[in-house]
Image 1 (cartoon, rainbow, N blue to C red):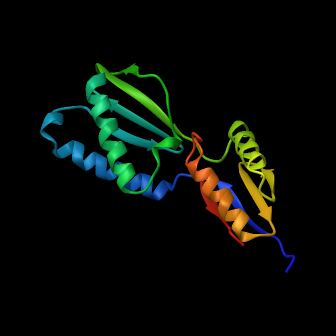
Image 2 (cartoon, rainbow, N blue to C red):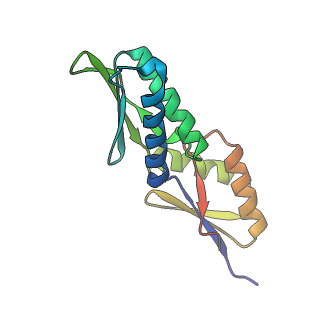
Length: 163
């Protein structure tokens, strides 16, 4: 039984669930009394969200609603990258939020160091925007998953293709 077991570490946002969360947030914004007559909206443009509102206070409220809906649908808000609030047309403000898809080089190095320092008998290999972890024992692989879930990494990690 010398066959190797492996899994991949990825970081992806489920775009269908994100779209559903945005639609729910839009419905709530339309029905809430404090947003009556407001020009608040959330638009999804490829891998970027554009949130628009009357002022920064209402913009923050729209973001809070959106975060609540995303959390309910199982989407982590760790993968959101916020830009500065900027003025938009018609005396409104806008904030662009980009989605982090994949594990970037800096976080890949952090994850590799964490796994190496754990002294578990596994090997890691960076493959583009994901990391493959291989080892002889499934218990070691599960220990790596537990280690990474406890670690303070600024991405929402998923563990796929456990073989």
